Image 1 (tube, helix red, strand yellow):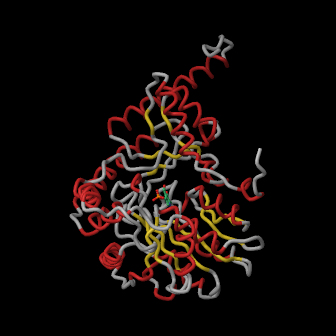
Image 2 (cartoon, rainbow, N blue to C red):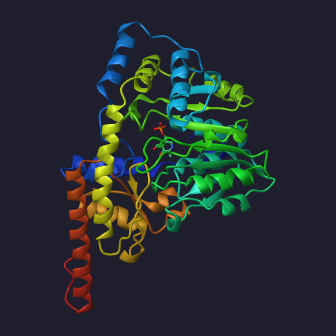
Image 3 (cartoon, rainbow, N blue to C red):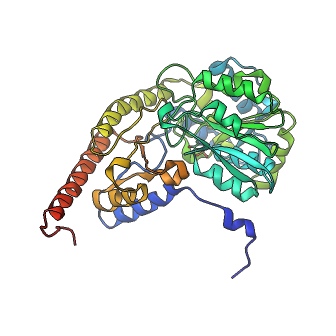
Length: 405
Ligand SMILES: Cc1ncc(COP(=O)(O)O)c(C=O)c1O
């Protein structure tokens, strides 16, 4: 067995992929599984985007591109950020990468090392904590509060910052909760960050266009952060392009050369055809993305009351993304137990809240990127399963033999 570096033991994973593998294995055995585990839109990439990718291949775009991405794509990103937030961002600060995750990986590797602290949202996207540990830095959990619609509390976050803190990660709208940080909370955070000028901020805004009410408050709109804000965004969610592997970071001028160097050392550049598709996504019609969002809104309006009606479940209404994160404490079952029993016994794939950090204990994540029919069937199955559990408990309590072996 080759001898691994010590840091490999620190690398975590994303349980949604494990749930997907188990769900697929059960389906192969002939079981009917409704997959609400994986976080990706259930829509095909809009036709005009696919066509742009196909045309790029037919036109001979088969070679390397500049490591930072082709200029028209970086210009499209700058124009898109102006459209959305009225900010002027130079295309020179845009680094196109293969997916949103890469900006996170680079930012954490660049700033994390033993002796450094990195503050990250918890419950949050599991890769933050995984890569922080991999970098040798210490992960410091920023709690998200159900009572605040799964936003952070700015004063609490600021109290976690010490001279060791290198990076603060913010994710709004958030995975796994769908929580949105209100503008007032961001204002308080940014005001307090003035006391900590050495701390960089990674703002993961990959769900920034998936907001149900009002507009998205982006950290890019605070000019005082410009020299230390890393923006993570991409095409995966907004344009249903998870498999194209296309994302971008907007980097402070001083950090950009290091991010570009990491790109050259790892992937050289992003698949050329995907970059042309990315231009079509940002400069083409917006109706496909709007239609998708309208479908998510309809599904949210169904699933949140439906989950709240399940015995032992209570679910905050998500302000963005396509995740419901019910509190399942009153079911009397742990998150991981409920995840595996719902999958194995009810045929519904969800992800345990503990997969998103310690503060996810007592919750379950549902990705409602599935048809209304599938959502209704899933809720029906869970309701029936919970009913059978309750009946089993009553039977056992009355001394009758259990129907379960
Ligand atoms: C919060 C968050 N950031 C980043 C990503 C990564 O996106 P991509 O698939 O583009 O790498 C995800 C994907 O699920 C996510 O939920």
